[in-house]
Image 1: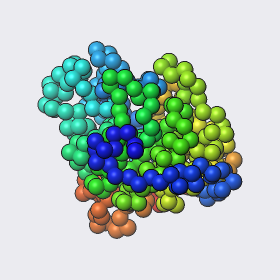
Image 2: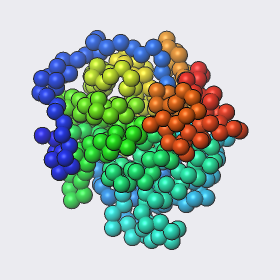
Image 3: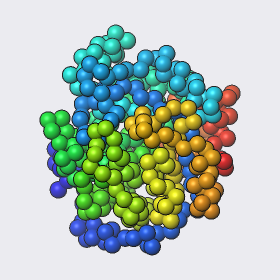
Image 4: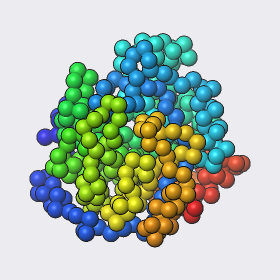
Length: 369
C-alpha cells in the first residue's frame, strides 16, 4: 500500500506483475522521439516559505528568512519575459506556508489576502493581463485550493517524486505520497492539464520507481490530464550530499518511463540537470520550461542552457527542436470555442489580438526553432 493513500482515499491498483514487467525494461526496448520540444518561460518564485523541510531541497527558507514577491516585482518579471518572447510564467513556492511563517502571513494579510492561494490567483490574473500564460506549481493542494486558481492557469503541476516513504521526507514536517497523489487526482477531477514527475536518487529503490510511474499512468488513464512526466535526478547541493544517480540509472529509469506511459504523455528531461544528449535514445521528447531571462530558483547552481545549446542537443539526436506553449497542443481547442481543458480566461488570452496573442499563435502547433 502506498503510504498515506488510505488517508486520502486513493485507490490505485498497482500490480506486482506490472512492476516486475516494467523492471525488465532497458533502453533497447524504446525508441528515440521524432522531435524535441520546450517552452520559453520566466521563473516566478512567489515565496520561499514551505511547510516541509526535505533534506535535498535548497529552495525553501526557514521562518524569518523567507521572502514573498510583491505585485510590482512580479509585474516586472513577467514584462521582462514578454519582451524576451516567453509565453509561460512558472509560479512556484514551497507547499502552503504553515503557522511558523508569521511574517509571510502578515504580509499577505496587509495585501488583503487570507491565503497564499488567493494571492496566487491575483498574480496569475496580473500575468494574463501582461501577456504570459501562468503555469503554477504550488505543491500539495486540496481540491478547494486548486479550484481557487485553476481557471487562471494554462496548466499546473507538482512532482510526485516517489510513492515510497523516505527518510529524505522524514521528520516532524514530512509530506507523504498520499498527499501528492491526492493533488494529481484533484487536477484530474478539475480538468487541469498537469505536469508531474519522479525525483531519482533520494533513497528510493527500483521497485519504488516502477510503482511511481505506474501510479501516474493509472491516474492519467482515469482522467486524461497528465501532459508530461519529468524524470529528474537529484543534484548535490548545500543540503544534499548523498550523491547523484549515475548515467546508467538515468538511462534505465527514463526508458522505463517511456515504456510505461501512453504515447500522448511526454517524457521530459531537464537540460540543466540531466545528461540529455545521452538520454535521447531512451525516449525523451521534451526539455521542459527554459528561461532566457531568469534563474532556476529551485536549482540555482545549474544555469538554464541557451537556446543554441538546446539546438545542439536536438542536432545531436538528428531531430527537430520546436517551441511549445505551457498547455500542450492536444489540450487546446481547434477553434475559438472553449473546451473542457481551457478555461475562459486562458481561452481569451490565447485568442487575444495584439502582441501577446500573436506570440501564442506563433508557438501553436510547435514552432520550429
